Amino acid sequence: KILKTSDFWILTPELFFYYLTVNTIMLTLKIKTLSHFGDLSLPEYATSGSAGLDLRAAVTETVTLLPNDRKLIPCGFSMEIPVGFEAQVRPRSGLAVKYGVTVLNSPGTIDSDYRGEVQVILINHGQEPFEIHRGDRIAQLIISAYNQPKIELVDELSSTERGSGGFGSSGRL
Image 1 (tube, helix red, strand yellow):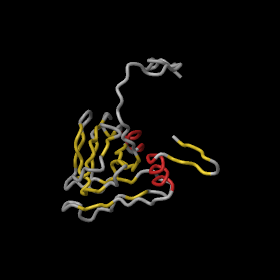
Image 2: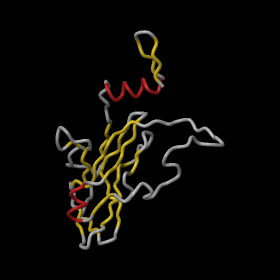
Image 3: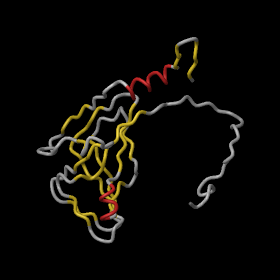
């Protein structure tokens, strides 16, 4: 909802907030380490172009994921996500392709009002047991803006070419 009047644009408050946060504000992610964090590295970007922060296992002893097994793996810290943002926990592609290990509820959402420990639900879809050692990079954390639209109950929705077609209705390839 952008309105143009003479030589300037008027943005709705929501679009203005989104524009500011995406284009001009460097966010701060506050992190509090927990007692079992110890000597681990804080979440960090592997490269300057990385979208996700690497999350590391804060396990006190090796954890073995058997095939088709799932476990909640602690990361040893809690965080304060800025209001208007969420954290998404996503799999690491190398673990998925090499070992069949992935994040079960991918992407897992961490809300801005959550203050508990960051943990990752890993599942082993592979054929062999997979060991998780202290400090292993187990997932990625993406910080993303979101919007909470108001809900409006209506009798009809606008029509589209696709309509209610889903689950493969647009073709195989």
